[in-house]
Length: 459
Image (tube, rainbow, N blue to C red):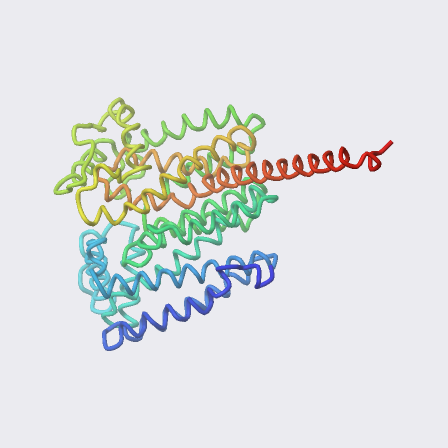
């Protein structure tokens, strides 16, 4: 792709450098003085190197400039947040991650005891990131957020390549999917905070990419990539490893079936049943206190405590029947909340523009999924299965709008695949109609000229 065809993406490299420079200037004289420019410019270099691994050149240039535009947008939001209302308003649990990072660093350097929450769990990845960055840069609280910026924009690579594998003749669908994944407002917001959404989403999407490759062809590189991605995911959200692993493996098997439609129908029932059984039978042991329906109900109640945006307060998912009856409500809130008529705070009001955008493209996602189910279901069984299982699991557990809104971001990139298919299908039909209309008008003009000048008629 020539640079002149990049459009608004062409100045992205310069904008990314400017974004890092402005953020670095903002934090001069603070403990983050060195962390922001060093991590920022190293991240830009790493983004260049990752983009150079793409082939052909057209993919390289598009992904590089898209990711750098995402870097620029994120550093702008990052600076605005820290210069105005501060980051803790959006995610108070940043204080917890900072505290755990200090405790883990003290454990490494001084042998002090670990907090109870860091013992007997594999979910030490994000506290370890905080601890490692604190060890290098001192009390630079924003350092993990800077790293999250790059974790987030790198999600474009696996999402783009998943679509290129599944729809090799539709590169524009891959571009739309990657564009949404990099530039969607809530994904930008979460990646500018010291929370674990950035690496979690990257690990989920990377696992799906390698599982899609395994479905197409059994190869060692794809197997190793899927294993590594799931192992990394375990360090951030242990329960997601089981959900993504089970659903992805089922998707691989269904995609190789001779009867994909029947296999997908049976597999969908199986995935929902496995999700419920996973929680009701206690499979997975230490999955962050969420392995049983009873504990899922307890978690829902804890999410509701003190939450002005709580929903489903009378629901009881501690039984299989209760979970199934609550599922439609849970899905509605997980997929579509916050609802404009329920907004009760300034913080919720901030989400209104994005909610309108999401509601505008969500029907395209439904339409895109229906198109795939009718035409190419076998190719898409892996992303469909993962999306179904994770969505159902979260829909049963969530109980306040803020948590649902935040956790939805973990599967938004997969949803964007189907939204992009629906959007591109509409654009293709509109273009075909315009071309047909132009052809009709051309024939009408030729017919008129022939009628005015009979000598021009073909005998």
